[in-house]
Image 1: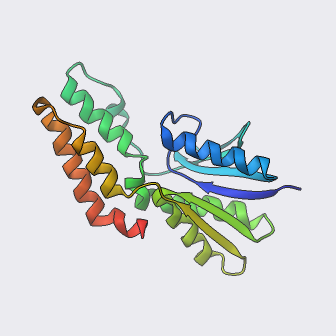
Image 2: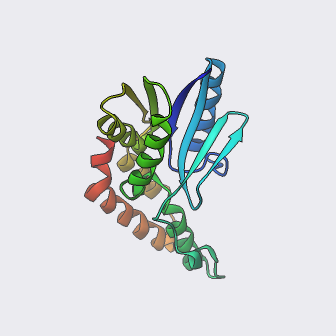
Length: 191
């Protein structure tokens, strides 16, 4: 039997098209080649396990989800951007505190049926999930690693610097709100 390795991320790697999803899929494929069985846990609006060519994606239902009406985009640009921002924000690392309990519970259920030791690899702020699992499963050896490619403060700073058009004041305002949120709660999960 192949030894499972747990990867923890926020966005569903099957639906994500950005660098983070590509990064997670790449790690899973490397784990496969090294002889492991990748199990990627992410938060979504449904509970299911999907077999893929890079391992198993465990979609974990989270009680914290975007409001359905936000996914309908109106015609005006600024309002559309705000709705897109709110909808996308729901599954970002900035909301790890809301999603962490569901992820920890789902992964703990999975690991209880597996023989240890367990390797949990978190990406970005999601590494805190592995630390909670190590505390929650003291009778099993849990090894936690984390890949961090930037801090939330740096990422938001780059987004803010990328907005140069004065007409995009709404973006600057939203990124300022994100930065405040990071200082209030996200940096503790990064630590």
